[in-house]
Amino acid sequence: QVQLVESGGGLVQAGASLRLSCAVSGRTVRTFIRGWFRQAPGKEREFVAAVSWNDGSTFYADSVKGRFTISRDTAANTVYLQMSTLKPEDTAVYYCAAAMSGGRVASKDSYAYWGQGTQVTVSS
Image (cartoon, rainbow, N blue to C red; front, top):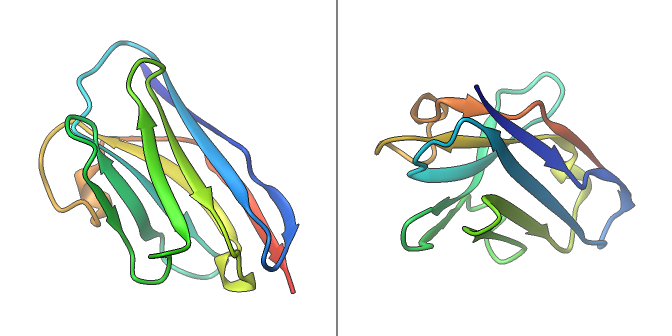
């Protein structure tokens, strides 16, 4: 069983920063892409950012480009999402996910494993 565990969410004011972490435990699997998605109340789950596990290439949604940074620690099997200049519209449950093979990095269907989510709330 593969488990992804997110941490680092919380309540912050607009303009603040937060760092989310996602650690993988359980059965060792070869990860191709690790990504972050978010889901606000009443909305679809949307892509935020992704990182190639092999070479560290990064991908971002336009809405977070320049404010969020995704990174990975291959030794710790952990991916991070550094979020800066947070806005109220960033409020959502943030999920990390792992893809074991190729596919569209921004598509939920490409990811086989998901974490339980961590709440990020940004007040104005």
